[in-house]
Image 1 (cartoon, chains in turn orange, cyan):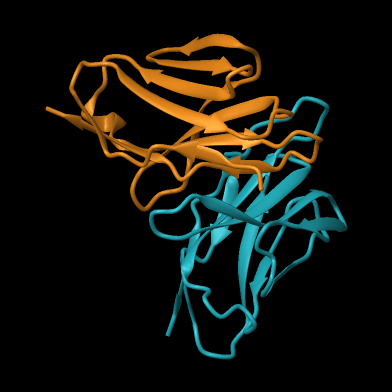
Image 2: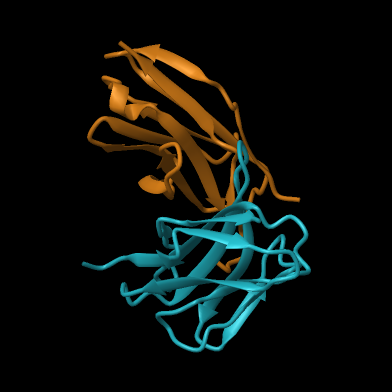
Length: 112
Length: 114
């Protein structure tokens, strides 16, 4: 069974701080990695995709990928209360088919 | 506006009843997916379709059925064989192609048992 693991949290950070969210995956053949944000009662919203080792920045968000260690992380700089949500890590299984495997998500709380 | 439309937003099922959840997309995406989300859990794949008239079972297909007669539409039927159907159902779509594309989600349907 291919797995994607995340700490469920809650992760609490003060407003303005950097939030660091981590994810590990079991399928060494995976090539595509995504972070989704899900507000309570709503559907997931794609915020970052990453395909190569290293860092990818988009505004206040930075995704980091290390395929050798099989982990992917998301950094949120200058955290805002509106960032409070559950963040889902998703990995496309190797071998094609575009099948996503989701982690159970990390709940982030940004406190005033 | 391009997007994925799921309907209804809320649905109630009686014992022994089949219900169908609608998913329509106007993004010209080739692939469509159905997921189920239970409270405090991640998304689990029910069925997916990469092209019209073809679909595959996901990890939890028992008690569900789908069809893909049109590129834009991928309805999900929750049959009476699904004994624990209460959940948040999410439809997603993605472009085809060599590079794996991210999936985008509709707003979801909440199904409950009466």
